[in-house]
Length: 190
Image (cartoon, rainbow, N blue to C red; front, side, top):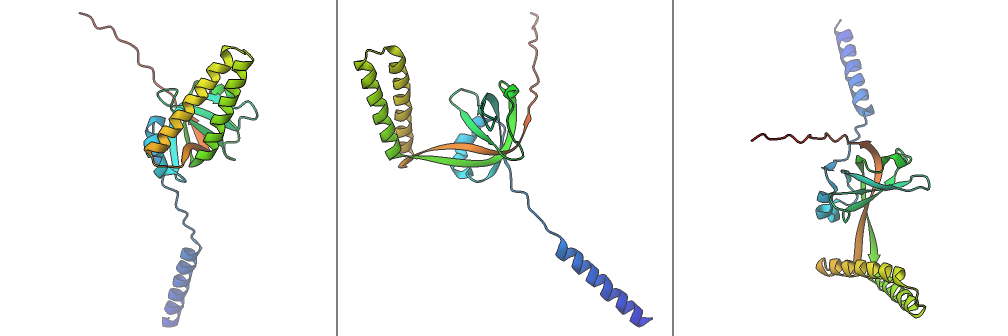
């Protein structure tokens, strides 16, 4: 009887040990959730390569397969490109104008100062060419907008003591539409 009890104990310990060694614990990456895109840009440099979730309004989906979309925060100046990962597949054009919550990995893209200088020279050359051809306002307006963007890039680089301009995008892993409850205006009677 004693041998049977010891044998049962050895088998029980072996079964528990096998079960514990076969368990694979995969920790989910910590998700830093930003309910609005506006909050992301303040902390983006520290969030690169982390899994986050961002909410914004879809302003555009790419017509070539829907492999990316753009979401906007509280102003048109606050936008984020979202790349559709394998699990997403593509973004439907019907999403434009809706709020979505996108989960993914934040990525950084850097534009070196030398590339910015080169782009500025191309814009100035194009502007001079358009002026010589008396091409008109269209090119001048486009060139001014591009030059203003370059000025903003340089200001950012100076403020952040960088020799590149950083842009951020999200490698999306999943998304969902966000239903926004509309609040009816109530008349206050005097």
